[in-house]
Amino acid sequence: MGAMKTLAAVVAAPALALAIVVAAIDAAPAPQARFPRVFRDVAITLLDEWVTDVDLSADGTRLAYARRDPRDWYLDIWTARPSGREKVCVTCELPAPTKHRGAPAWHPDGEWLLFSAENDDVRTRKADRMAEPATALNTNLWAVAATGARALPLTTFATDYKDPRGVLTPIVAPDGKRVAWASPVGAGVAEAVTDAPAEANPDAEDKTPAKGYEWGRWGIFLADLEFTDGAPVLKNVRVLGPGRQDAYYQVDDWSPDGRRLLLTASAARGQGLAGLDIFEYDLAADRLRPLTQTADWDHQAHYSADGRRVVWSSSRDLNVTFRSIEGLNWRRDIRTELWVMNRDGSEARRLTFFNERGHRDQAWFRSRVFRTARVFVSDSVCLLDGTRAAAVLGYEASAGQIGGVLAVLDLNRGVDVSKR
Image 1 (spheres, rainbow, N blue to C red):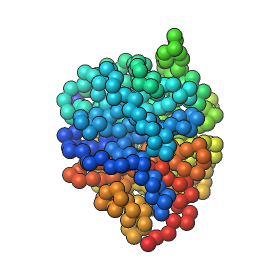
Image 2 (image 1 turned 90 degrees about the vertical axis):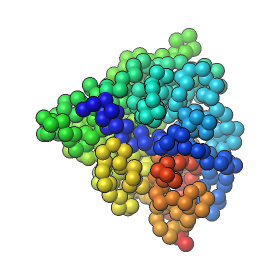
Image 3 (image 1 turned 180 degrees about the horizontal axis):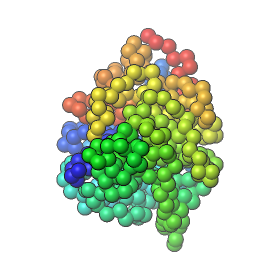
Image 4 (image 1 turned 45 degrees about the vertical axis):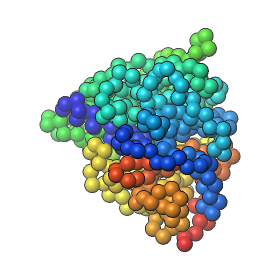
């Protein structure tokens, strides 16, 4: 398998394309709207547009999110109050890194943000798109002062188009002493597929990806985070693979006590990528527990502030059928809504109805955001008040583009929201 095919396979991971706000870098930006915009009838406040992902500071006072610069379409990291006020671009004036800067993760001290950044030596427009911060292709982990005063590299993965490494959705532990992320592992996607266990890949001889391995092999990276002379450094980096198959991992969140990780994964033996599930990983016990076990597309899970509930994105009840999961083909069919469940996976409840014909959520989205055929929730985070979540609502725009708005939603809205 050549380098181009290798890159195309890895870029298929869900956090990847969900992080691509616009499919074509040279597309014209939409006119700037005034934010925040409050819509009390649907319990939604829009904070910004062209957004890809979001995180919340430990004290709950600041959001950090990645947003495209309409001048060059590279991603930058912004911060704002959960109200949408006091917006500041943290990375816009950095001398390095110079390209995509996104997937922000707050350090609990509130003075630093960790983020994923495209390597400066990545070349070509196609490679740029594949190296977006949440794509994990030829990116590295960086730290930036919340003031934007300076940025420091924490990892040194070399740019390699055949055997790419990178940093997918970094997250910092509540005590600030560890950081986790996911990355492709092995000798590139083609070789990684053939290295899969024989029972998982009986067709290894012809290098046909086994079910679940279409995006290659992935691992969870866990490292100690320390400060030397006031600057963050990584130590003791290790790679974990807790699943029965290490086909795909995405690290979504730490539990409030720092003992567990929420994962989006294809970790059960023989599990296909069209049926990604949410897992909870107990680090000390090295035990992986599924929270969802359906044929639906479940991803981007986050704990509530008290750790008792989990908010995540799912295609449940939407009858989504993927014509193809190869490459980025799945983007043609993806539709998801925001859901909430207890930490043990019980009492799952749907919060949004943007894809349901005749529902006022859909009517609102089509009239107030974009007249689209499909909406998907690409990231979210629970606010500390326990009643709201900030979510990135992705949607199919015109000419094959993907848009995304940052919104704050009431977690109780799904209980009594009526249809028109």
